[in-house]
Image (tube, rainbow, N blue to C red; front, side):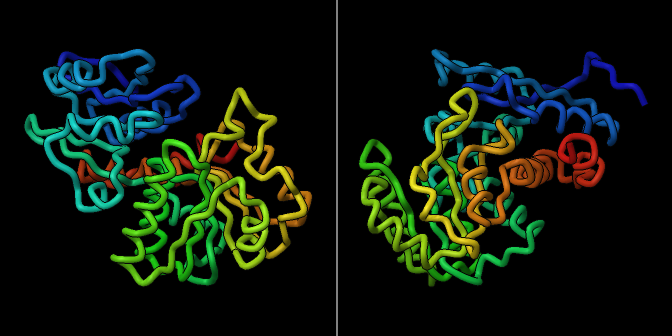
Length: 289
């Protein structure tokens, strides 16, 4: 069928900055077309925006919901009416559903990430995980990995504004799950080398290496990589980051954030509509190139 905007079309979208590179509009709008839903999804760059005023406008326009990317995943919290249990535990939101005027925050990043690992035949319970970063996406991944049975989690972060969040995250995991979590300063290269030696999964959940700064990598010393390490970067622009290139040269299997995007999008779509996304059709059209 053809897709047409009507007088009844409901709006959703993505808030954050930058957003112009996002594949989400194509993914969701094609899903709406395939399922004959009168919805449309757009990107809204929030650089310099009044987030409180923007959220009020979206509520007043009766949007069906919206997604959030950096840096809005945590900033959005005061402007929502309620949080899902997972979003409350994580302390960040990437999906908001409008339930009759009440905006409910959810987080699907972690479930999307863990499901994406299955495409690479990786079992989260098989060994220690090293996670770079402690922001919204990193927190979601860490919490979900702990809930799904990762035995040991090393959170690596710079001593900056998110350092306290890294400590809070490790404490929450140690109190609420059977996972053993600890925090390491990114500048402590000796400890970083030791934890990578025992890890079977390295996940970059920072923005280092994202376009346009594609020459950057959070792991400068390539001798830290070993062939038993799956190196995963949640960045998908570029699809082959400097981190992934260096890891592949050292014999590691690598993967980017494309399938995490697909599967967290599938979960968000189900939250908004109660329907299943046609995942294979969307994968074939937008994720196989």
